[in-house]
Amino acid sequence: TSGRLQLIVNDAESVSASVDIPYRARVLPGSLGYARKRMRFLSAPGVVTMTMRSITLSNNFSVPILIHTAKIDDPSFQILHFKPNRLLAPGDMVSLLHLEFKSNGTTSALYTRDLELATNITTIRIPLQVYHGGLHCQLEENGSIDECSKSSLDLDLGVGRVMEPRKRQVNITNRNPVNVTIQSIAFMRGAVGLRVDGVWAP
Image (cartoon, rainbow, N blue to C red):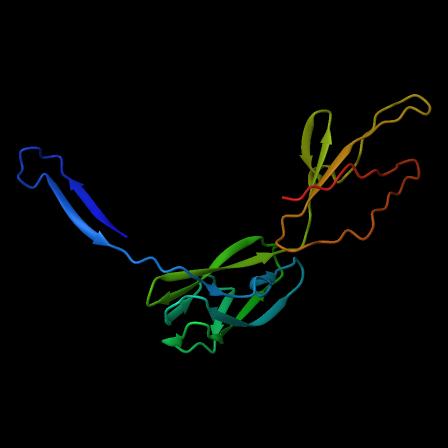
């Protein structure tokens, strides 16, 4: 593809008030293939962890890819066993490097960082997802929504007549990039029942 980039200055009397710069770009269809599940790292509160992953990439472009450098702007990650200027021919699949992730367990985390690969065609960014494995809980009561951490799930159902039902809605959201299974929910009071209104995917 090609075109022209036009630069216009605010001096209308100048002979160079408008400058046209031609450009030509080559579009390369393709990608670097990788296993998305291996780009997810657990950082649970209260748990000190060290995770080591071997990162394998496949060249799905129609041209050779020369990977000059690899970096991550996050001190929790360390790149190991990477050899600069690694060449991947079309269709090649190689173990490019190892990623070491360290979590000190003091805070729960839910964020994304990029593994940046400088190549001969462009800078390719591979997202690394750090997650805590917890569920987000909200209590809906009298038209307002509060965090469960503030209410400690102390459900105030008020004063009612005999056999008069009262209900409160609890919304539980999984913000992690992996599935989280709720194995059981228990109540200390026998008169409290649980009904699942629905499960919605993002």
